Image (cartoon, rainbow, N blue to C red):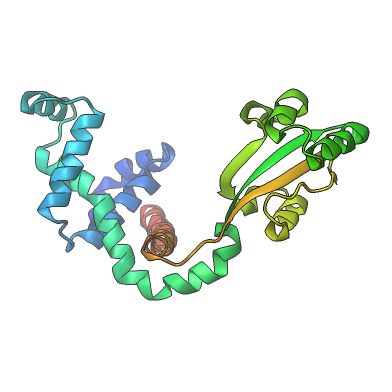
Length: 243
């Protein structure tokens, strides 16, 4: 068990880890290693993970890899264990939470739906309505008006936003984008200190495919890991402070 890794004669070490905010990450890592120790990634996945690591670190030979390992005082097997953890966690997530993944998806679907839209914002109502009329009449492009007039960060992208989760948009704008017809310029909308003109370009409905099943299962696993880590940290600290 994870708790058994912390012996009574390690009180000073535990205190040091706690004071330097390293106790929680360590407990979390030990929990993950313990929970995935029976899982074995395929040789193909292990080889690919090592190859990706060497490419990222610019390790172009076996000698370069050995030097990298030596500088960090770890063995190749220990590195392979580190690299295999994401693969193992993906497998553990599906093994443990696949049956609950669809329910979580349905619960979160509105947050997962995405959209691409054009946006410009100004502080003057008159300008906003004039720009809206130009766009509605097809006299100019959204990109040109956003670049020349928008006072928000979307000016740099010609007014283009996304694809991005609809949940990230302001609630007032979010509500309109969920029901707006694609390609129709929306009348100026007052949001806080801004007047906003927007046009939905594409609405992307989230679907429960294999990738989404993995994502939802991984989120549920992360919740479990966080909860268990909190319990274990409290238990370790209680032992340290106990009689």
